[in-house]
Length: 406
Image (cartoon, rainbow, N blue to C red; front, side):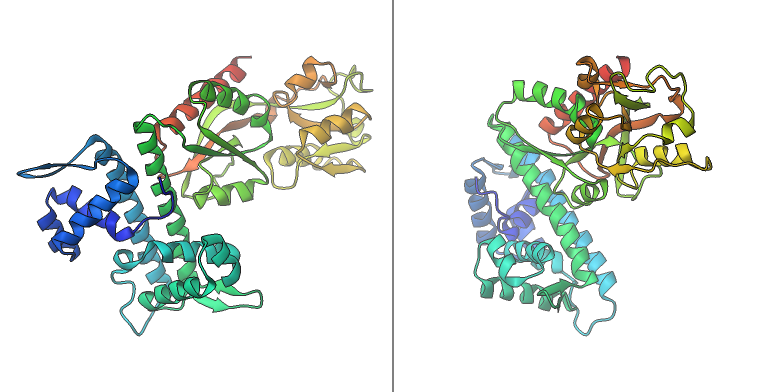
């Protein structure tokens, strides 16, 4: 199946026929001739390799595959409508009507050009990303700008920058494209060819047990599924989630929630621990004082993370602070640094479960119950997972329950 953004006019025709159960009624609604709509649906069915409608004497009725796909198409079209409306609001006063029917006029090539330009900031790089010539991409971008009736692209020293109106449109266009991709995956699953993908943004704790346990369980049943695990700073992962390039995040939840277009689901509460090498000088000191802890070097996560906030709070107002503090969230580096020195770190015991079992690292005998934080899933508020993605989410919950009970 061709996974590129298809002819959007074909998708609009499909959606309209599904709504009215009639080609003639759809023709009046979207101002396309009946032969054009018939041809559009036939091309779409050929591209998808499924029958979308049962043609009956009293109308056009969605097949099972058609019912599955139309929901994704309608969600995609709503994203384009929202993007056009928000871009219009950002555009302010304009000389031409523009945007009045932009969501009905925008083409697949224009969508790809807009998204590529938002990512590359350069016509030449964007053209290579889309796989068309630079003049063709430039023409698509300018045609879109003409239809919009407001400036979308501004020259900059590095190439081109998007206006606020274009950023709104690009943001929702990415989500629209992601929705269509979900639709493709669902059709493949319906045909028994589950070759879809799940993109997971992961923070340190989930990588040790929760995520690998869920991945192993899912791929035993669905070996063809593509898993893409992305790690990085929370802000980068959140940006990918909100723009549709990441399906869900796993790790420490934020309080308060950073933006209103995501939802968080707590899976279990996780207390932190002060950890050092096995046989650390403080390993026999019950509830070591802040002054004693400050005498040692530390490895801690970057600023802004929940764990780093607990670390800073520990020394707050004490008048003392460790002289040597290395920032890192890499468990490999933390393990190497701690095992070969008297450095300390503040970390979840679940993150070092293997190191603890091997006798490499051990928690200090400190009361840390006040450091509990919620670990769980972060998703887009309006995201609807495919059946396979929903199964993966349930497996993550199951793995979280194992951690909670251990």
